[in-house]
Image (cartoon, rainbow, N blue to C red; front, side):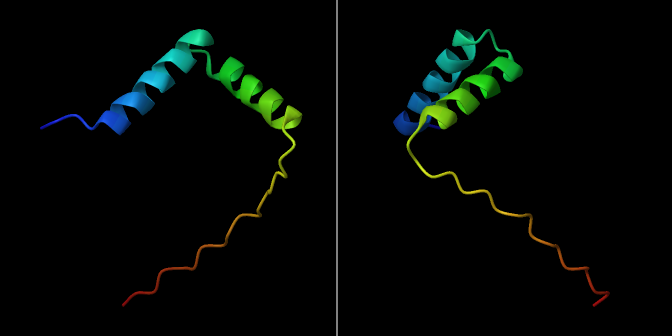
Length: 57
């Protein structure tokens, strides 16, 4: 199976990004929250959707 160049690029970026923060998820999330706070973009927070109960069909 051939490797998709777009997928390879994303994986490379993800690995470099994780390496930058020592593979520490807390540090990565904090950096993303800081970036979001400094951004001029509007942040949309949606409420969770309710799941319907399954029927016994």
